[in-house]
Length: 494
Image 1 (tube, rainbow, N blue to C red):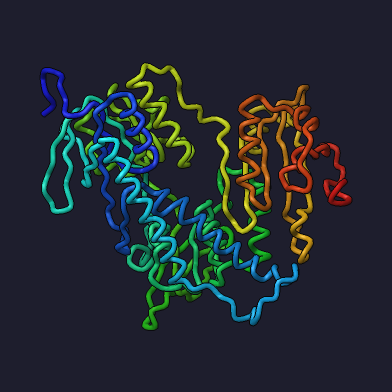
Image 2 (cartoon, rainbow, N blue to C red; image 1 turned 60 degrees about the vertical axis):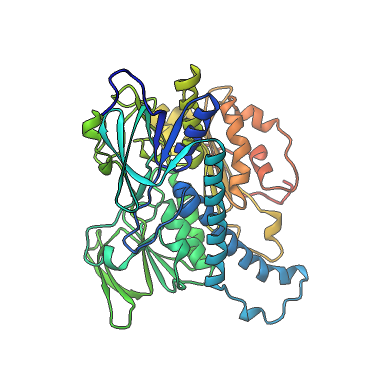
């Protein structure tokens, strides 16, 4: 039980050892707090588990970017011939899946180790146990060996994140993998079916196809729901041209394991009611994620503000219980992005332990989808801007462009495109920037800071670009959709 006299074992207990929880814990220690972090990874249905660091480090951003880089390097090897490099037996070049996954996992394990050492150095107690509430201030951790450890804390932060959903169809849990499994898969994935067309599904399908493993994507409604749909179409068009097969308006019906070990998948086109089936080596479910709040026993702590998906509803990270907070992917309606969780965690710790007034600003958060041709964006989509301000009050500047590096060899440039969504009235405040092309993440990051500072189209047009870069294309925007003029450039220097 929590002590009646108000003394606690810890000033702060963080349940969840991912990016947001760790950032909050380390910042709290900087302000003199006594902190404990509880973290436990329940194995995936396929038995995959990992170390301290959360989704991003283990089965998210980091391994995803490394796989994406492997795919880009494969493309570069073939392109190098056009630049004069002599590469013998080019046709025999292929990925060694075992070597790739070993390298990726070795890096992840090194990060796990550094993270544990960092907690030790900062005198944060790390408890490798599954935490749940006993009362509003008491947490019980179930350790790996089944024993229990009880502790009390003045403040508690929920940072448990989420795990992949599996659709309720025959064979899904038994035979399918998710993003929890793909980065450490013990065999080459081969011909792969990806169920779901959110950013996780498209990124996985993109790097698998580029690595030489044929990919098919089932799209239930629209790709990249919540993102600008014109840009989403650019991405899927590019992926289709590179060989990824898309089955639109479809839902999975069943997954059957054949005697050969392969998987027969059946799906339904919801528009035509036509059923299809095909045989795959791997089926990857990318059908959303659910929050890991069910096991926390939140009722006894008095936390009632949960959505249908189990996420915590909170305006400023604080739940309906004054001393219990939530950060990261477990929060309803917040960007599921590592930097968001980290920044929110740090600001929360400063408010609790240093009387800071600063709240997390969830507006205008930049992000990038690491598909073969990347998509970076910040701010409002064109659809969201029109919905918020009305069509007549919005001006959209757009342009196709030609990356210099796409000329040798001649690469497809039909989907290299960018746009700025702005207010129509002067000074034309920029509401959103969208970019499809090489190194989109690097491009959009600086412009995200500019939007935070109140970027206008006049600012953009009076900025001198760095030539020849793809980022400079934002400084050359001058054609509006409203004008009807051709947005294709006459040359690389036009």
